[in-house]
Length: 148
Image (cartoon, rainbow, N blue to C red; front, side):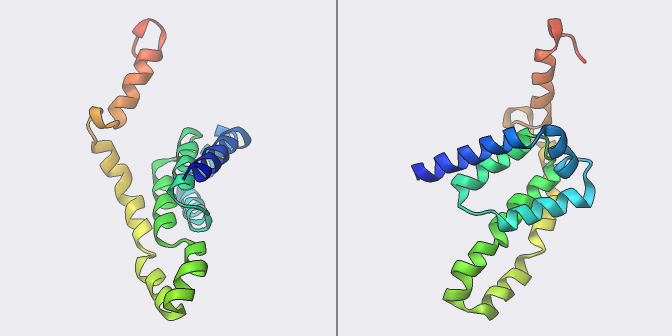
């Protein structure tokens, strides 16, 4: 797994350097709307590699300004409707009709994750890294501990 981890972390590092946060926020930020969701799902559907590559990339997207909805679409599409999985594994082993049926049956699930992830994330308690945790870090980093 080490080569995949090195590749994943290297790719994630390149993303954080090559794509400025303002661009990431514009493409996949909370306010990007349907365009951000579409970009997130398309990126997930064509992303190569397994979890060793995909999750560092997702972390780079999040730290670069991507929103929760586009990231839910990215990971949902990556895990359900990946193009390389379709071409390399599904069609050769189980046939085109079964592979296409599997895609059609599961294509709606990234939309469910897009809708539910932001709601559930905001309900998380502070100890699980929910929004309160983020606000606490912002207060601690402000001058003299003053609230912003």
